[in-house]
Length: 462
Ligand SMILES: [Zn+2]
Image 1: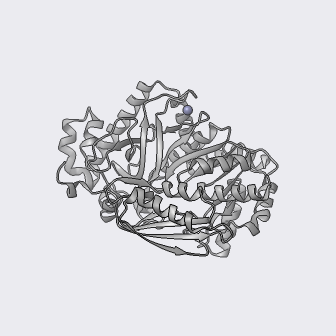
Image 2: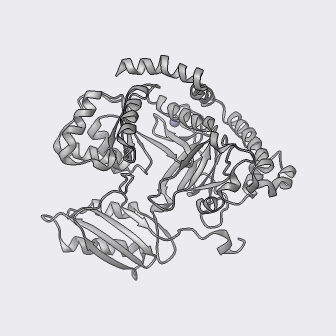
Image 3: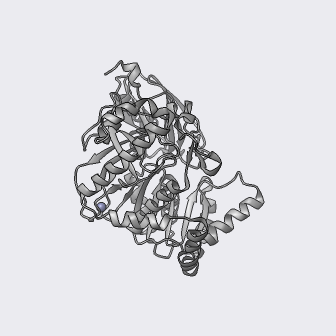
């Protein structure tokens, strides 16, 4: 809808800036300017922001005031001081979240947010409006690398606002359609019988880009490929978010939509952290957050190229600073620079959620994607889910393809599981008709039900 896009860019956004003091476009311009700065200048800018945030935290945030005198001793080396602070896990934050709220903050003026509860207890936290606008600006910058402008039309394949009443839902739809130029298709409802209906909606709306969960975009792409059907208009990009984007998913989505697939890396409780550039690399928005990669067990910093736990320090969230927040993702930095010319640092790989990692009886980590890889190379299973209850005890749910199933394949699958998790693991196999996605619409193939990482206290003081 080009006219709606024009109105959003030239009327709605300027009005929001005047009336609501929305500064997203100003923040976007700051990011546009800084993305081509020299590496050293970026590091200096980041260090300055970090120092300011830490100064604020030790003075005004109850959880950090005990570190005030240490900070005074090392104020000129904010990175060193940050590394001396304990890692903040989601559980620790949840248990004492009020301690992280800046003294005197008026919560009635803040944005209350929470993570989904599909993989554990939800985490509640506060953000102020400028922080949210900084996240938005980072997303628009990432999208701009692929020719997408504010106001461009999109179709979002997403969980739906099912909890809204009818009137609220209508209001929401109108706002989505006319103020955001966006159409929603529920991710939990993708189905072969609805395929033509859903594609009809997309074709009539003619979006500039699609945006959705990796698994939902992949499901849609696979259905289209099986039916041999296409969208019939050119998309600027298909943007995948909220889940790891695996190579087989990227290939299927590229093929079905004949458009570049762009990976967005963010988290509800961590903001927009990194975006894929046109050269296919992931650039971290170092002007918005300070990232560290540490050894999952010892908590020691790891050099670029080595994979470990990601810790995020949001440089702008002054109302509820979470320093060294352990997001639960396993990533590595890359020491290289990118051919695209953007100077923001690169993440070499994002191995996905720590939640997707399994532990073998020998104590090493196995990514859930490993099981997916085995099953995808077999004929006899439509889909599966593997749950690790304890290191020695698992449940494997299988949806058989009755025409292709063979016992020999199942034996090979079990052997594959035992070869990485340990020969002595007990696997209870159950055949089911279907594996429904989580309430959020996300499909989960691999679920671990016990904590992955030993905390420092369990390890002594190493
Ligand atoms: Zn790049």
